[in-house]
Amino acid sequence: GCPQEWIPDANTAGLWHFNDGLDPTADSSANGYSGDLVNGPAFVGGAFGSALSFDGIDDYVTMGNQPSLNVGTGDFTIEACIKTPAAPPPPAVRIVGKNTPDTGPGYNLDLSSGRPMCMARDAGPLLEVVLTDTAAIDNTNWHHVRCERSGSTLKLYVDGSLVTQGSLAGAGTLNNSEEFRVGLRSIGNPPEQWYTGLIDEVRLSTIARGVPPPPDTDGD
Picture (cartoon, one colour):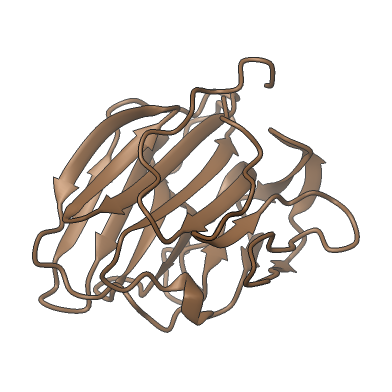
C-alpha cells in the first residue's frame, strides 16, 4: 500500500496528486509546475483521491524541463504510488524520471520485468548506478516506490522497506535538459518504455526522505 497523501513542505520540488478537478495535474509544491496530459491518461480512483491510468501505448504526462526538477549533486528523493496489471510485464517501463536517454545524466524510477528499479547517472565522469529489487510487484495492488540519494549512497525503498543500495561516491551532476515525464522514458528515441497501470502521489524532494512511513492499511 501507499503511506499517505503527501503534504508539501520546504523540501518539496514537485508534488502531483493527480486529483481530478479544475487543474488535475497541478503541482502542490511552491514551484507550481503543472503537467500536461498527453494522449489522454484517464482519471480513475487512486490510492488517495484520484490517480492517472496509463494505457501502455502512448499516454504520458510532461512537466517540461524545469530547473528546480534537476537535482545536481545534492540529495534527492523521487517516489510514486503505483498499481500495475497482473499480466506478464514488459521488460522495462518508466514510472517517472528526468534523464537523457542512453548515456546522458539524470534519474528515474522504472519497473524492470515488474521489479522496481531506480537509476542515477552523472554527466561525468559517467558514473551510473542501477538498483533493482528482486521481487516483482505487478499484482494489481498499490505499492509505494522511493529512490533517494543520501550523501554518496543511492537507495531503493519498496513499501516502506529498504531493498537495495549502491555507491554514488565521486559522481558529478545529474542535471540535464530533458523533460520531467511520468509514464514515458523518451520521445523519438526507442525504447519509449510506455507505462501500463495507475500512478498516484508523484513527489520529488531536495532531501533524502529516508525510510518511508508504513503503508496505509485502511486504504487499497
